Image (cartoon, rainbow, N blue to C red):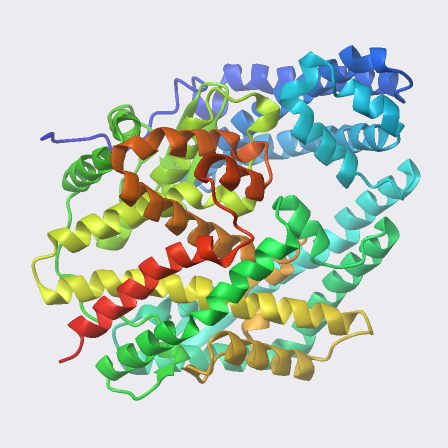
Length: 598
C-alpha cells in the first residue's frame, strides 16, 4: 500500500464544532448537568431496596450512571486534546474546571448508590439480580456492593471526601509543585546549564557517559538536600491512607489496589514468583550491556545509554505504511482500524513548538472514535510511541458495542493492546533490520522495557510494601526510607545494578499519587499479560483475532482471572501462563548476547 501525505494534524471539528469556543460543547456540558440532576433525584427515590420489584429502579439508576460516564469521558477527552495542542488554552482550562465540578457531584451520588446496594438484604439482592434487565450489569453491581464503604455513615464519607480535597490530595499536589520548582545545575559540553528535574532526568539517555553521570549525582544531591521534606510528604500521604483504611475495615494496604485491578492476591504472588525465578537472564543482559559500554557491571546512570545509534530516519508516511502492512498479519480488523485512523484525522503527529510533550490516546465513546497525540520526529522510538497509542485506540474500538457501564477496564488490562501492538512492530523491525547494529539497537529497546517491568517496578513494589509495614508503627525517617529503597533495588535487580539511586522513593511520582497506592504492579501485569497473549497470537495467526477482540470487549466486566480463563482457557494463578510470555523475553536476551559477543 503506497500513499503519500497522510494527515499529520488531527481533526476535532466532527467531535465538537468550533473546538474550545464550541456551542455544541456548551450544550454537552448542560446535558451532563441534567443527567447528574436526574441521578440525584433517582437516588433519593431509591433510598433503600426493600423488595424484589424495585429492579426497575436499579436499572434506571444504572443506565443513567452509564450514560453519565460516557458523556464525562467524551468531555474530558475533548478538553485533554485542546490542552495538548495548546497548553495555554485558557478557555479549555476553564472548561476542565466546570467538568470537574460535575464529576465531583456524580462521584458523590455514585457512593450513595453503592452504599444502598451494600445495605440491601442478601435474599432480596439475590432475587433482584435474577431480573433479566439487570443481567448485563451483574458483575458491576456485585462489585459495587462488595466494595462499598459499608462501615462508614454518609456523614463520615462526606467528611473523608472533604479532608481528601483539603488535606490528603493537597500533599500530592504539593509534591508535584515542589519537584517542578527545583532546578539542577549540570555541566554539558563544558557549559553550566540550569535545568528542570525533568530535563535532568532526560539526560540519562545522553550519548556521553560523563553527562549521564553528572546528571545522576546532581539529582542525588538535590534529593539529599530536600529528603526531610519529601519524607514528611510521603509519611503524611501514607498515614492518611492507613487511617482511612482502618475506618473502612481494610486490613491490608494491598487489598484496595487488588480490588481496583480485579485481581486475586494469589495471581499477583504467582506473577512475581515467576519473575523472581527468571531474574538471571536479565542480569546477564545488564552485564553484557555494561561490557559493550566499557564497564564490568551496569551502573544505574548507564542503563538508558544508547548502545548503538539508529542512523535510520523514518518518514511519517513510511512509518504509516510499515505499521499497516504488518498489522494485517494479525487480522483484517486491526489493519482496517489503523488505516481508518491514519486516513481520517485521528492522529496529531506534527513536529511543532508549543505542543504538550506527553503522548496519549483519548477515547470518545459516544462517537466511537479515538484521538492520538504524538510528536513524530522520524525516530524508531517515535514509531513505537505511535504504535503504543494505536493499541490503546484499538482497545477503544473493540469496545464500541459495549454498554457504558461495562466499558471501564482496570489499569491491569489497560496496557494489553498497546504492548501487543508494540510487539508486532518490534518483531517486524527485527526482520527488516539489515545490519547487526540495527538489530542490537532494537533488542536493547525491547530489553530495557523488560528490565523496567521485571526489575525496576518490582523494586517499587517491594519498597512500597516494606514502607507501609513500617509506617503502621509510626513515621519512617528519611534515613530509613533510603535504606528500604536500597534493599528493595538490590533484591529486585538481584544485585546486578551498581550505584542505584537510593532516592528513587523521592523522584518516583507514583508513590505520591493519592488516588491509589501500589501504582506499580499493574504495569508489570499488563506487560507480561500482553506478551502471553502475543505468544498465543503467533501460534494461531489471523484466526486468533476474534478471540482477541472478545477478550478486549469483556475486559470491563470480568475479573482478570475469569477473563483469561474464558477467552484463552488459561489459569493465571498458575506459573505456566506467565512463563509463556517470559520465555519470549528470555529469547530476546539470548539473541542480544549472541549479537554482542564480539
